[in-house]
Length: 347
Image 1: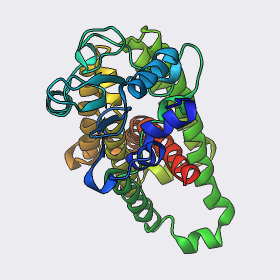
Image 2: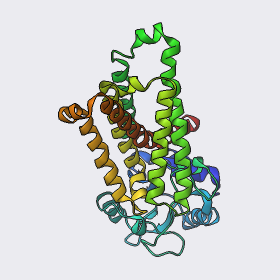
Image 3: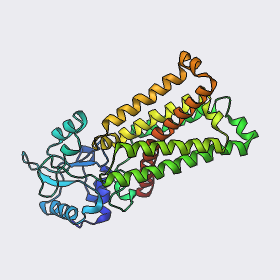
Image 4: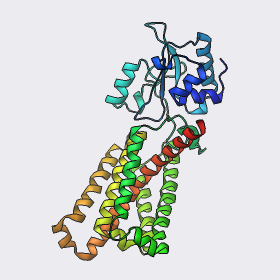
């Protein structure tokens, strides 16, 4: 079997393309089974009772050996208990599923092993957005994520529901947009500005994290600078009063935060951050976020702060919501967008 870059990508992508590529005729009998790692970036393909020969498997292994920069951590190994062969990413499917889903392995004991390496040997996985240093190529990293499943659909529906909830408020609705298209367009320009700013900081953070020089001070500085630029956009276009409104601020910031948490858990970014010894920072950030949230809407605290304190607290709350939820959501949207385009191109 001639293995090249194109058909290997198709083999990795989905069970259906692997079935077509290999000419398997018993697909309905589960000849090809794809196990998608739900909390990590790369999939694991499990192939049973295939017409592959040992030479075919050696060809695939040779391709992996000759293309280490493709970003795949997949090796070919024989299954010792029978004549089945597996193209997989762990010692056994049972042990892999148990250690990966339940025990949440850290960076040092992930169930990967590749060429001439022992099981659970430490392998540096590519970053979420950057595959190499200093090259920036998210396409090579995201191309193995597989098809969209029910969780992706649920996230998209959730995002649309939040958008409709915001648009249905008394400040922004369909009639307001039709009457004031120029003023309403400012909201979308602000959103585009947030996407650019958060993407820029995320790119810088990824480059620095890839070099292993992440510090707590650096991350706090990036978040603070991002929040400051966000507030500059608010004041520049006179939308600070709009976002400081309790109803809008609460819905927007909490929704972005929850949606962002789902996104980072989806692609394993939280575990990537914790692998750098920053798990306490994540916990502190979550606690402080909800602390600000409770302080902003607690009546006794509002009475002591006065009107000026409420407005300032609203700015802080919304800035945190955009920084935390915006960064994570942008990563998720990038992954979803690339996967949708791959599905369209692959037919």
